[in-house]
Length: 193
Image (cartoon, rainbow, N blue to C red; front, side, top):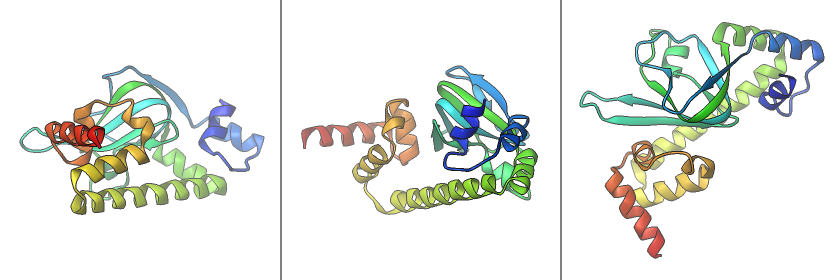
C-alpha cells in the first residue's frame, strides 16, 4: 500500500507515520467492466483515486440522451462533485460506470479533509490537482462552445491519448457533444488528410 500512497502523492515528502495514517483511511475497490461505482440519487460521501482501468461519469437528460462529463484513467480522481462539494445536494446527479476493469482507492470526504488538515502536503497536492481539473473543465467548455467538431476531436486525442484506446466511439461523441455519425465523419476527414 505504501507504493500506492506514494503514487497518489507523487512529488510529496511524507513521513512513515503519515503514510501509516493515510493507509488507515484508504479502501481498495475493484470494478469489472460495466459495473457502476455510482448511480443517480445515491448518497455521495467518497472520492476515488484510479490506480488502473478507465471510468466515465455521465448523466441522462430528460429525453434519455447520455452526456459524458468526465473520463478517469490511472492517476485521476473521480466522484460526483456536485453532490460531494455542493451545499444543497448530497445525492448523485450522475452515473459513474467502469468501462475498463479498474482498481480504485476510496477515501471519504471527511477522512480526506482530516488528512488535509493533518498533513499539509496532501492539501497542497490536492489543490494542484483541483486547479488542473478546473482549468481542463473550463477549456472543454470553451472548446465545445467555439470549436468545430474536428478540432474538438483532435484536441481530445492529443490531450487524452490513453483514453481514446479505452472508450467506445459513442462515449467520445457524447463527451465532445456531437453525434456518433459526426465523429465517424470527422475521423474519415482526418484519415484522408
